Length: 167
Image (cartoon, rainbow, N blue to C red):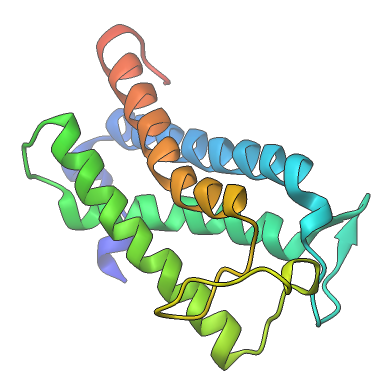
């Protein structure tokens, strides 16, 4: 638990506030991407369980995408911290990390928690894990959202680190 609370004496309040602002921005970005996605695909989300919805948007996939994108990025940054590699290497490593966690989460949700998307039940899933029962365009979107999120976070980080301060 100590690692999660920054030591302000070591990094200084200004640096901590700047890092906090970046994380808040990343969380806001993941929420914006999730709202955009749910605006496009909300009719393809009807589950065998009753999940709360607001204005016709199911909160389960909305919050799942928001938290999932943010947490996967945070985990990757924590694991990858201190390693100097180029953008393309980072993007490739993040993509593989994201894809593995996406497939694992979808498989666990489908097979162990019995969460079935009835609106897309007629579509075939990924053969190895029998998950992601969605149209092909949704599968492409699922696998693209993580790398797209990484690209946007990388751009935000690069832009603000070199030109401006979030503090």
